[in-house]
Length: 432
Image 1: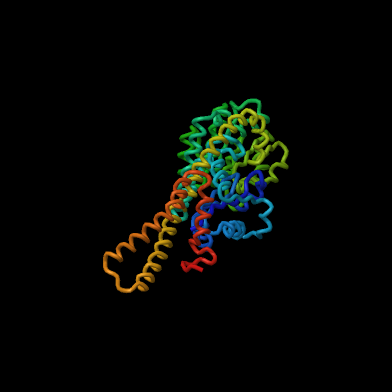
Image 2: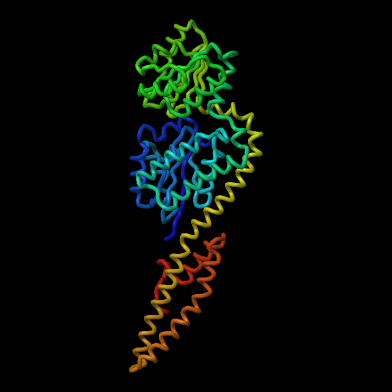
């Protein structure tokens, strides 16, 4: 059966944070969405990747064109949006290009911060959800696990990770533009996810004196605060504790903004207008953008980090070029495997069809010849079998020979068309 791999999505290059946060799969929405994805008649396998910087759906189906048409509608319907509201932000990749894109994402070559390590962990977690939900199959299992090994190989064989900056270090650079010294400053982490924790660690590593951690689940706040050497804050005490924070890291998503202008203005009043630096890492955003209009407040969202990391791109570009070469080699290897999935079924179908013709014509001939003894029948049987095997030898050998090269797909398609295999138009065992 013909297979197709299709990837449709949007990222930080094609859509602003206002759009990305509207289509993010947050708060337990991933697994139900996967079930609805698999309910589409054109989808045989599927997975969803949803991070701060991208939302992508990758799927396999017998009709790639139909899959490519269905996925934008699926994304829009999942979030109650008109398809037209998303289309200008979407990209779509099919076949080899879809595989290349997945490998580049895993290797952080498509990230806002090239070389950042978080994306690989996020990809593993979200593929695990797809696998647990029974949404992935042979093709996506191989594709995702190969993407993981590609990412590890690139980190091992290039210096891309050494030259990259993390989201946390970008936040530090922004904060240094506000505060000359960190030693006497206090930070507050709102939300205890991996990215927020890494950012807090970066601030501590650069001299921030103390950190507070607020999380909806207090036990989780206690655990993270213990790891950071900080203090846990009950969720309902967030606004009362906010005036103590010079730097605020918003890393918790929710239906509504967690911090708005009124709360921050009250904190400023208690702080006697000492400046506050706020970085919003969450998608959907945790801090109302209107907060940035307040005097003595400096608010940045995740899109603002792009300008911070721009200075490092030149140094990373050389290592990224090496990484791209590795990706190309790995895409080629995967594609040989993927296209080889059709070789054995094609050979089997070809042999079955020719054998069916042989058997039918043999029976007709034996019936026409009348009364033959066993030896005569055996001679005719062996003769027709030998003829069939000699005729099949060349096409079967060609298919097997090209199983591991780029011409394989051409030979499979040619064989199926020439011998009318697998429901080709006009397919019939009857000779015309």
